[in-house]
Length: 219
Image (cartoon, rainbow, N blue to C red):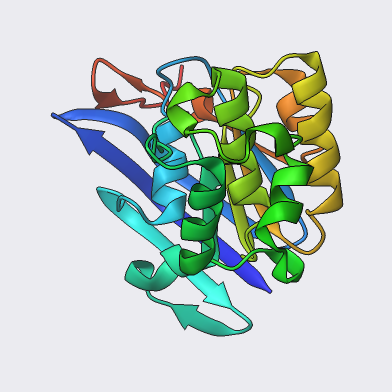
């Protein structure tokens, strides 16, 4: 079982607080939604949770089966799909999947042809990714994350560039591969992305004003 604890965490860039005083407990078997408008800090928080960046202040702790995991090793526990994580455009789809499998194994020791079939991209298996549409690339990003054999799954606005059929495909894929995983989904309130999440973190609750922390006023 994996748990991630945020303790009064805050992130600052260029003297501006993106969020502050954020405390949350996230556990395996629970899906958590990070909700907010564009520019609210959702992606920044997701990167903090992933250990890609550290909070400016406060703490983040990772615990796997009762043992603490150092933040610099936490990336091994995570799979993530986000618009800012690029695919290797010169690779074919087959090459991309084989490369990924060397870094992180797929669930159930899934073979590359089976992965491509699940993506519904069999006819494009030998096509260079640079020739894929934005929707096809998003399917690949999502499948690489969801089908990686990791205890934590982090998705940043996962239905971006997906049509209705793509959204249905995403929901089916995550429904079949979410058991006992810690899942965090960043969304700007697109219902299909997060309506199955049992816990929510609303960025507006940790917003700042003119780069200064929001201070309660008592009258």
